[in-house]
Length: 307
Image (cartoon, rainbow, N blue to C red; front, side, top):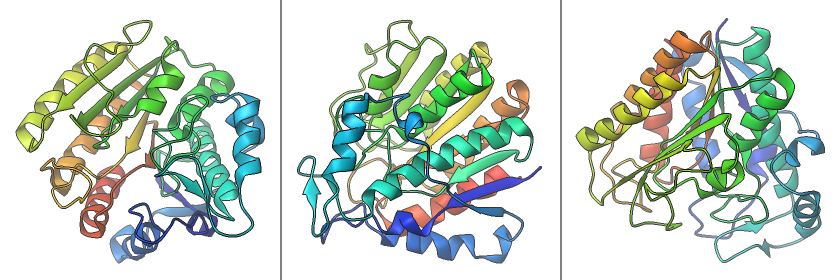
């Protein structure tokens, strides 16, 4: 078994307005990383279009219909000031969800050890009935709910180290006792949620807010607390909401992490997956808006997954 990488050209057809940080170039520059000789052994697969019933694991049918109907023929249709759709956004979002669903199935079938989904739009801000923060559907939350529904899991863990709180994942999974959701994020920062007091209906949500300027040492302290909780939880599958905007070069935030911190966090999740999950680990791209920070961090993340 090896590391599998999902991507699809449809994810570059989700166009955002000029000057928007969540832009096509992010995936285009990551392709340059993926084509480096050090990643030649990674199995590359096209992200499939998800079945529509996967979307309704996390969202009501009325919301799914709303997003499908909103896609414009020309220009942009706005969900809010930051979140929009272009022609092509619907299929891009379905590819993102399709990737994580198939990745989940592959790690259970034994055809992959772990998987990275290089997809966009991101997903962790999308709530049950509201797209926001560049996100349309709760991609990783859907992956967790798919694992529970199809594979009968009782314990799924999600780590979200994006610099912004994964409010959408938290909203979708608030009442789901079979999922332990842990988030490290800068505070104060968009979307304004993620206080330690936000614990979910079953004390299964862990928030570790980090102050402006936080660097490696404080991040690792927060992560070690999460790792201890996950170890006691004994997950059967681990997901990573892999946002790389806590990197020191990112324009949208003020944390001071570097690519070695993301390498370390990924290795720690791999060790937990080895101990509890038969190595089953699925990661999906969230944020990361400095091209330098994104490319160096994804390189480190993939390197850790492959080891």
